[in-house]
Structure formats: structure tokens, C-alpha cells
Image (cartoon, rainbow, N blue to C red):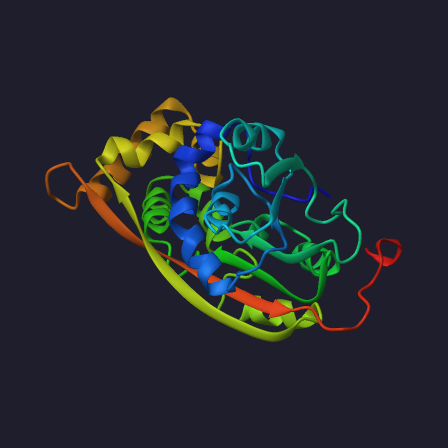
Length: 278
């Protein structure tokens, strides 16, 4: 089984599709996690580097390691990194190639919803984090707080019956319901678990700016659009454009995007070793 259901192809495509919003969410997430240390921090599912770069904004953090399953994203992040404390590498969230307690903290931004065995990934984050260290993650509230994506799939489902199944998969992703992240953290044996939420704005200059990521190859919407015939694609685009315009002239729009966030600490008890992981 693949460790990710996310369609990852091109770093620039991801930046247009999600990276610009990841960067906006990264600092509120770092503040929520409370990472203030001179130790080592692991960024699991680092993508094009939004979280790692937000962590690097703190001069007290000694080293940051970003791991992502997509070589294209790792290459993009590496090309755009000039901080010697930050290093990116290809790696699997469900089988991290680090020894137990290698890091002071382990964080994951907007990744776990795309990991079918997210419970394994969470246990791996715990395993590689020292006792007393923080393990934290953020995921989108895809059902109730992700307006720009909801507008697309709700509209597309009214035009194309095949979009309805895509919509269901988008809205009911794992860990998207209230309390699910906290429960997953407790199931992984983490202590002092706290779940909260943070909201950013997704701002678009025009409908063309909103639609552009859909013509790429990265993410759930582009993956769906790529399956459409020219005729169906034109109908979906026209309907989504009308939803974006709301009867007004084309121009800037701003949509709320809410993320669930969770953090917990690693207890002073042994974690399962690599030989016992499933």
C-alpha cells in the first residue's frame, strides 16, 4: 500500500495549488506547537518546505530535517533553501529512516489526511522523538472549514455525477472531524494532548488565479479535472466560475480555511521498535 494518496508531480505546481497557503498556515502552527528549542526538529511530509522555513525563522532551532515521499517536492525545497540548518530528503512517513529518539520534536503540516496508514505515521513520529519532546500536526477541516475547495466540489457535483464520489472522498478524509486528531494522538500513546484550530484566508486575485492550479497535476482537484472530457471540463469550469463570481465582476476573492491542530508529548516509556511496527 502506498504511504500517500496525494497526487504529487511538480514543485511549482504544488506551490500554486497549496504551497502558498501552507506558508500562511505554517507560522500559526509553529506557534501552536510551541517549538522553542536549540535542538533538532523533524518535518514529516515537508512538501516544498513551508513548515521547515517557518521553523528556520527561529534562530534558536539548531537543525531541521524535512522528509517527503515525492522526489520532485524534495528537489524543489532543496533548490530554494539557503539555510545550512535545513536539509531535505526523500522518505516515507510510515517508515522513517531515523533511530529512536533522534529528534527533539516532530511536526507534520497538511499531510496526515493523505496517509492511509496515518496511525503508523503518528507512531513513527513518536518513535523518532525523544521523551518529553513534542509531536504535533495540522490538517484541513475539509468538511466544515475549507471554503475554496468546498465551492469547487459542490459546484462540480451538480454538473458532473462523477464528481460526487470525488467530493465524498475530499470531505470525509481521515482526521477531519472534531476530536479525531486528539484521539489518534492518544491512541499513539502521546500525553498532554491538546487539539485546537486556526483559520487563515485563501486570497485569489481573479477567477483565473483560482482556476490555474486545476490545470496542473498536483492535488485532488487537478487529479479530478484531468479525467474530464473537453466538453465536461468546459461545463464544470463555467459553473465554478459562476460560483466564484457570485453575480459580481471578476476580481479578488477571499475564503476562510480552517485547520485542526494537535500536539502531545512523548512519555518516558519505550516506544515500539522498527522490528515490531506494522
